[in-house]
Image (tube, rainbow, N blue to C red; front, top):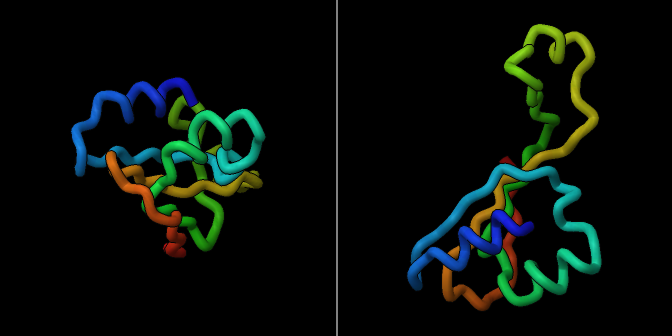
Length: 89
């Protein structure tokens, strides 16, 4: 959250920042109050299936076990005050 808040502070109006995050980033009262309430993402691009992310680039091992984690792209546009839209990709 701190990294995202810092990145958003560096943007000029109309500029955007996009982050690849676990979908669980949407959870949490503190995160909601400090990040999502004052800075609504413009878009969330939710993956329809699980994306394999490999620690230290070990994709072969991850392909064997799969992934239980859901990921999405979160897009913030500085100055955007509308509702957050979700698109499945």
